[in-house]
Length: 68
Image (cartoon, rainbow, N blue to C red; front, side, top):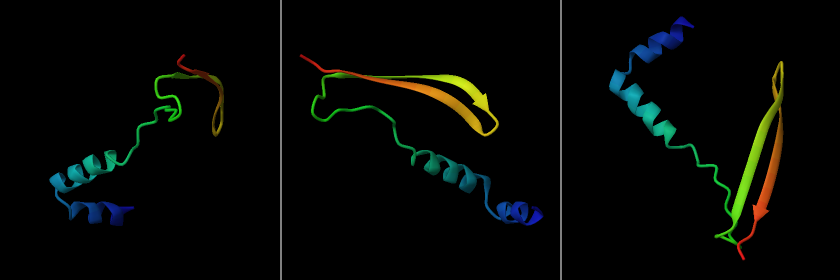
């Protein structure tokens, strides 16, 4: 564990901040999009039902309202 902190000490604060900022750009947006009906309405509803020791149980409802 001490070895990890010593290796981090070699980098400057600006290098670490830059690495964090650049890694945040790698996340993608999770939008729902229907290429066949781009003006339709896709609704995703989710609800946490219960917590478990390793995560949670969730209920997901997807509804697609096409444009007319």
